[in-house]
Image (cartoon, rainbow, N blue to C red; front, side, top):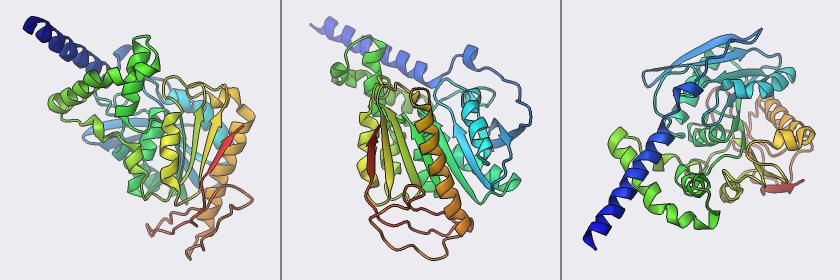
Length: 331
């Protein structure tokens, strides 16, 4: 009996370490350097002693959008969105996340450190562009990183697609997927996920349990559009729904897209995607331009031009949006 128990413990420990190392490190073969597109300039910031790199193109309307890619991707994966949004008049900044592309670092922390990198990129924008507002568009991990940065109070609005609510929760979801098992077996992930999180904390000093968009969203006043594909088997729609009720104090839109898988709403419903996201960003850009010198009165309706009111003046003072109910759409 004892040898069998020892064997089980060693298997759990060994497999958990294997999972942790795989989650923390992106293979060098996937860290691809991509040349700058025409009319883009290089952007560089320092964060935690690392050199992070991205690309930037100035727009015409005075507002900037930070575009964050998902795990294992690079800024190249966001260029289609950038070209479209620049055509809408926005300045666009596309970083390679730490430990991705040509940015420095060896550890992916799923938002624990990346959320602070967001602030460094906003500093760069304020120095080089001085936008009237900074907003964000993030895919998968990029969306969760933006949500985790909300307590900093520096983003006027965020669009996240297929973001995970917490690292712990999505790790429970992805282990059965990795092993080709049905999702209802996710409780069996517990010993492996919890051991992996413990190993990461001891070995690298990173607590992946702190990668928690759920918690970060409490009390945040940025406008928010949550997009999630109903056929997403990598990050189930439950993550979006779990985050949705926490935003009852300010208008939040949850758009669940039928037939869309992981981060492909723009492919399944391209017209609706551009319409919703474009109107959302323009609405919050216009609010910033208005200055919102006085706190708006509470309302139970939304403005005709877009979802909810929010403002984040450039002087750092907080202007609260009206307390209006969240909205859910399935189109």
